[in-house]
Length: 197
Length: 153
Image 1 (cartoon, chains in turn brown, orange):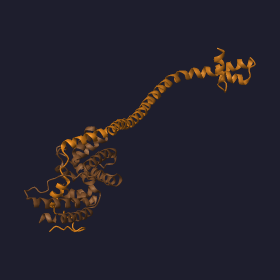
Image 2: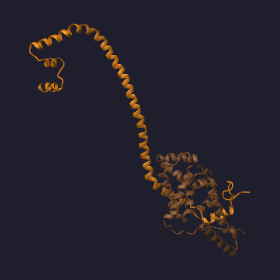
Image 3: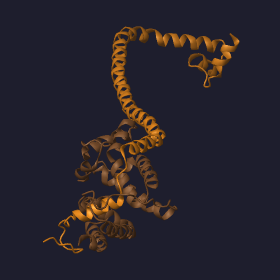
Image 4: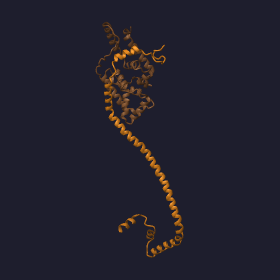
């Protein structure tokens, strides 16, 4: 289920042959202490895990700490993993829950503003100024979203996951995913309204 | 027409490419490969102890699992051996008894009564009590006599 989206997201760190069946085989080997299998699991999911962690925590350093913690926690709990299910949703749920707890429990480092090229086409100074303002508004709107809404909108629109896959990763119903998506999209579209005109 | 209302039909909402690009830009570039490799190395280092513990546990569990099978096999083999061995012993004893009993029965019938009688007669004539006679023929009721005899020798 999640493997389709996962295979489209993985980069050089993770090979493109990721599948649930392979994950299960790797998990089985990890249960017996196979370090190579564990490393392959990490390679497959680290990129997506880092993206999710960044969305949850807002900066790269905290995100990396969270991803490391989640992978080690997954190893410690691997015996509770149900072999009949896909590994990715189980792992990402663990990661997201740890991230949501981390948001509450620890004082996060100040989020560094990320730089990115918002408009790609050439523009005059007035346009750039306007776009800069819109971009600021959009970033503020994105940051103001509740964590789950932020995750849902990013996982759906950017990562290309289905609502069912997001529901499995977040441990909520598909209807709730759709509701979060609807709310988040409305807020962000309002922030983007001027830019769209 | 795609239904976007919460609780409406469960068809997927339409994807908004412009919104996707805006979010991607706001989130900034993904982590570079070098940084991901460093993180992967950190994770591998953090997992070494847990993986080693799993290795040892896996070995022990394997041994334990097979130990059970080995015990069951050993028990079965013991029972089998006992059955075979018992049958052989019983067979031998039967053969022995068959051959000896036949030859001894006649001589015993003739001499045993006479031998017991002669021992008993001699004991009585020597003034031994009935208990002494029984001790001589059967052995004392307690096992101390054996110890005493061993000490005396």
